Image 1 (cartoon, protein in one colour):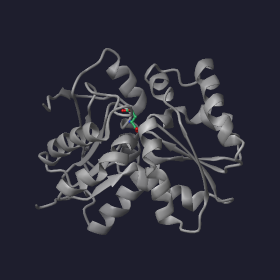
Image 2 (cartoon, rainbow, N blue to C red; image 1 turned 120 degrees about the horizontal axis):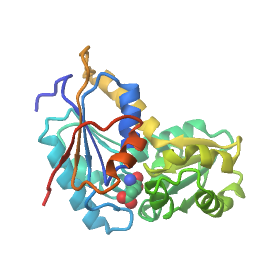
Image 3 (cartoon, rainbow, N blue to C red; image 1 turned 90 degrees about the vertical axis):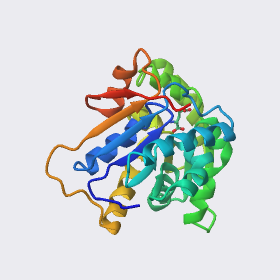
Image 4 (cartoon, rainbow, N blue to C red; image 1 turned 180 degrees about the vertical axis):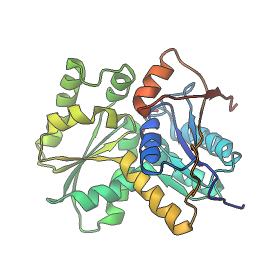
Length: 270
Ligand code: DGL
């Protein structure tokens, strides 16, 4: 397969959450063409079986590979946790994912070697973050995890600094605060939208690791290593594919992306 610098980067998620990763990639790599896929008809993945999530991930990866992408970014912690090997096995192009990038950054940032990790029940239940952190640190850091299932619907609702969200955050995060962690991994692509609120709940002594930023840094390094950075001077092309356009998709999506979505194409994968 011939990879060209002008080929797009393929980014995918179960829905709109991965747009936080797309945004980080657009900000870090403003010349890159991007094809985004959000499986909005079948979200959420965080409560589905491993087999189902792997099957969906394979369908999406094949769709993006047919668009001649030069790199795939799994912008969904749940898919990264349970379907990375499936995607890696079928992809002739490099595959990046949010868990490895977030784990690597957390290990580099902690000073007291006590890390907290929050995510969907599937991601936390898979143990993927613990395994990934142990890959970068074999000396046995203290790790505390917490599944935060209510954050995704609260973010979808746009309640980013709502009293209900703040109360929910206190409920989920108090056990982590009690563990004296100095680093908290936001292990779900929806959570970066809650960053200001989560930061105020955790306090200044806790660094928040945003997997979106971490994976965009990794994408930049990898493109440089492969000599596949797009040198184009014109406006890059950003195309968004979804499997359904729910009522508030554009509004929520633009909040995630921080800019207009432009053209959104509806696809069927079945
Ligand atoms: N985007 C997913 C993640 O990062 C959360 C939403 C879902 O459950 O599909 O885990």
